[in-house]
Image (cartoon, rainbow, N blue to C red; front, side, top):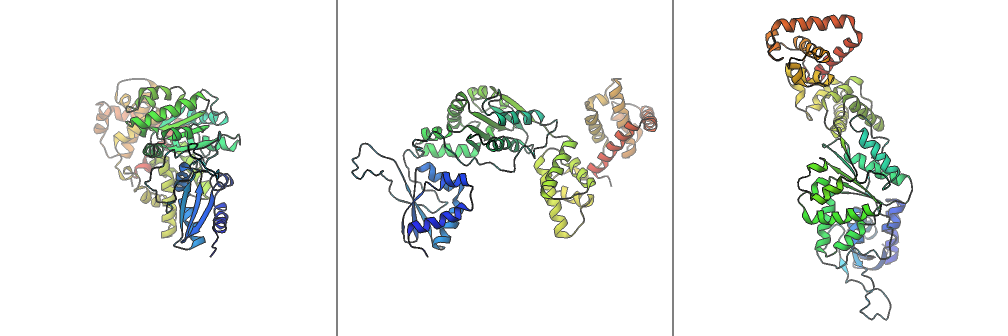
Length: 473
C-alpha cells in the first residue's frame, strides 16, 4: 500500500481519469490538492464549499471506489475547504486561511455551517458538467404533428441560444410525451457546436433542494451568482416551484439576470404558464415573454415511428403486426412504448417464446386495462370519430353534412358487424334512430366498399384497429 499522500491521490486520479470525460476531470479534479495521509484517511483540499458539494452530489460513488482501491476497505476521505484570504488577519506566511479539517465519508454530508460556501473567485466563465443525457438528441427525437412546433423551436434555439424570440422556451405537455428529451436535445446540440457555451440541466426538485441548502448555509448570493454564469439553463418540471415563495423569488432574480444578459432559458412543465396557479404573477408574465409550445399525444403513425426508432437503436427486431398491436394500445405515454418493448424482449428471452401478438397481449396487460374490454358501440363511435376528426356528438346528431353522414353510417356498419347488439339497440346509440336507418346505412357502406378501393382500405384499417386494440377473440 502506498503511504505518501501525493502518490495515493495520483493513484486515485489515474482511476478517475478513466471514468470521466476530460472536461469534467479538468474542472473538478485537477484543482484538488492532496494534503496529508494519516490513519487510513486521505485529506484533500478543495477550493470552496460549492466545489465539495458538487463532488459529493455527482462523483461520490467514484470517489468511494477509488479511495478504497488505494487504501483498502477501511480507507476514507477527508476534506479541507479553502476559505480565501482574510484581510483583517495578519498572515506572515501569506498562505490562505483554511477551515478546520472536516472528516467526511464520501456520501455523508456534514451539518456544519460554513459561511460563503459558493465562492468562485476570479472566474467569469465556468465550465461545468451539464448534467445531460447524451442519448437525448434531435436525431432520435421523432417529429410528428404532435411535436413539430416545439421541435422546430428547439432547433432554432439550439442554433442560436439567447438570440431568438423563443426566450424563454417553455415546453409543456402530459407525462411521457418527450419534454425532457427535447429540452436536453437542445442542450446537447449547443454543446455539439463547440461554441464555448455553458449549459446546465437541473430538475426543479434539485434546484429547490440546492436553494434550501444555500439558505441553510447563508449562501444565497453565491448560489445566485453561480447560476448567473450559465449560458443555457434548462429547468425541468418548473411547475414544482408552485407555492414555494422563497424558491420562486430566487429563481425570479436568476431568470431576470440571465434574460437581460442574453442567456437562454428552457423550461418544461406539465401545463401551460397560464394554468400554474401557485406561481407568482411576475414569473408567469416572464414565462410568456418567449414561446410556449405544447407536446400533444402522438398519432398512431408517429408512435410506430418512435417504436421502430427505438428498436433500430437497440438492434431489436419485432414483427410488424406486433409493433402495430403495441402502438394501437399504448397511446398516451412514449415511455410506456419503450417499457413494453423491453418487457417483450425479456419475456421472449427468459421464457423462450416467439414474439407474437399473443405474447404482446400478455405483456401489455401490465400497462393498460382496455385490452380485454368488450367491443362496444360507444368505442366504435369514438374510434371512427377520431379517424374522421369529428365529434362523437355529431354522429348522434341530425347534421346531414356528407363527411359526418359517412362516418355515422360506417359506425353503424362496424357496430353491426363487430358487436352482438340488435339493430334497434345500435340505432338507439345514434340519437334514437330506428332499425331501418341502420339497415340503410349498412347497405350504403357495403355499396361504397364494392366500388371505392380507398374507402375499402379505410374500413379494413378501422376494423383491424378495433380487433387488435380490444382483443375481441
